[in-house]
Amino acid sequence: MSLPQSEISNQLRLDLLREALPYIQRFKGKTFVVKVSGKATEDHENLRSLAEELALIHQVGIRVCVVHGGGKQLSDLALQMGVEQTIINGRRVTDDATLEMAKMIFAGKINTDILAALRHRGVEAVGLSGVDGNIVHAERRPPKEIMNRETGERGVVDFGHVGDVIEINARLLCVLLDQGYLPVVSSLGADSEGRVFNINADTIASEVAVHLQAEKLILLSDVDGIYLNPDDPQTKLSRLTVSEAEALINDGTASGGMIPKLQSITELLHRGVHSAHIINGTDRNALLSEVFTNEGTGTMIVA
Image (cartoon, rainbow, N blue to C red; front, top):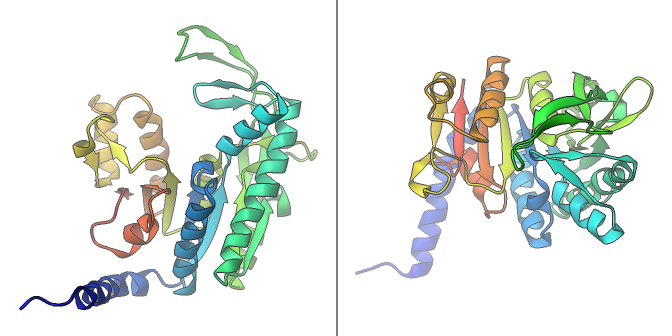
């Protein structure tokens, strides 16, 4: 005789809790840095679901620091304001008007939306930018000669108010984490003169993870992980070691945008972070499944 559907569902929930228990015990007191993309926060329901997952991780005793970007929302605002945007090889040229909008979107709207969603789940979160507490000390990126992948032309590009990270001062983040708060950091930084820069959120998250001696860096994007062939779902890589990732680069298996992503992650793991994960931040429960189950959902790269 088959079991009623309700009993099957209850049994599945209990099995999932049993599977999660050793992971909760293993990671309690450890630090996770979670980088959230703009695409993961633009939809209100998706943000509420993500906040629920972050709240659960936080409330079982794992120290969580969130770093977020917001390129999608910045582009939308620029379109509304009639401010033309220049993006070369995925990097935004940040002129004066774009910087002002970045301040409004990153340190304002998106940061506050994440805080509100976390508060709805009972989490004491604190909104920051990289300028607060001198968390992100940066310098203006110098003009660089690059080849535009779309046009094939080489030229010198001045990215404007785009910054490169010089140093991370994690003292304020450590104080907040030690007191049970969940910091939410937007992707802005400043130099010693107080000039503010737009900085890649992946870069900030990686550097913060190193300086917090994080157990995990989790990159929430709009893809399910790393694929050997982006057009073939069957080629997704579930788990890699650093040496395996470096072999993919050296033997030519990795190509295109996968190369810089793998290079940045392997460098990060060489600097002390134990594992890095790439998962789809728009899939419900993807974060919990990646952290608390054996199979996971994305790509995990381990030291």
